Image (cartoon, rainbow, N blue to C red; front, side):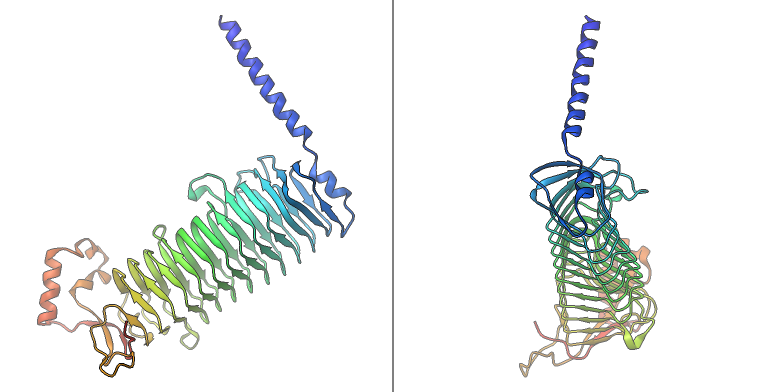
Length: 407
């Protein structure tokens, strides 16, 4: 009986392997079709499955009509482009390898003037890897990563040493980051990213334009490190509550603008360091920070940033500083504060008195982080009440807005 059972299992396994091999062999080789396409020609794939991996080495157009699937081998990058002026449109790429060392991706691009439009990438470790790519367009693609824990995923977009590219109107799901390293003068506009670690992570990438993106349920929204000249405008960042949990982070990136963004339900709305160049410090204008645990967080011993026409609403703590002067040395003008207690008797929309945020005992945890444990305790609340009633020391000024806007 045992022999019969073992024989049956062996027979089933043999049939399964044979069937899989037959399917693999039945799928036409994409590489052969690419090699047969003349330089500058167009390869229109008929509906069906094509066997990868494959490499494009001459200028051409490959169109899939949303009915052609390029199947990877599960051990490498599915499709590689090593040429200028290549267009990929309407393809479905799936099943990359799972090696971070090899940077297994759905697409690896190397060249200039490449267009990647309206493609679907599924079950890929890294989505689209741009390596020394310039003057190219990545538009309207949909990338879904492998079902792995966040730390084991690859980046939805990984850009290295690339400039003057456009990343527009793509949808990214279940990836790690969108990463730009040593990649200046790129534009990221209208993209959507959910379920990741860093929505957008820029390192040594100056003069990048980030506009109209929708980033939700990521550990941190937009992070700019050592990247001067950033433009971060009209983005929607929400539910960044883990891995640091800031909606927007700007560090040592002077000449940058953060304007008209909506930052909701994050651990920190905006986190900024002290400016090394006061004349070209961060400009924060027209943003809405709401329902965050901390609205703004400053670290360092100086400020120099400009905060104008922003709206702060329903944040558990509006502003946190790491040292005296980190908040008050910034420029504050015309912001809307939900905790403002003044009046507007002449009805001009501006408060009659300045809005001052002072550090009483309820904010002692800013200077002594260990005191955070007692932040809402009855003892600290009583101490704060007594200090406000009859101050036994001068409270520290966190900020002063001379012309606060009314609600």
